[in-house]
Image (cartoon, rainbow, N blue to C red; front, side, top):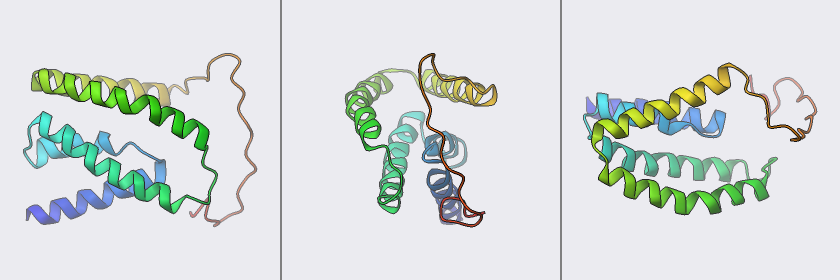
Length: 140
């Protein structure tokens, strides 16, 4: 029965990461903790592997698409040492604090998305041309 959960969750996480470009950790950590019974520390470490592998495949499938390489690599370069620091902090924090912090970050991200948080002043956004119906850019 456990393998059916793993397959189902893996499919959902893969769809979320592929469709939205990330966010799999928001799904994996709670499932790993509350459904599969992992500790918060184990779940966050496992989530990094799951989301990292899924994201790598997502990049490969979009390699010819409109990827902002400069932005992605800049975030990645800053994110790698920060991820290491986060791992060190995670290992020394009580599980309850890890889960509470995780929930707080998820809540703030959700609130920003729901309220349509505007870009910072002076940031220019490029209008993208509308994709034709049923194109690879808009499959549904």
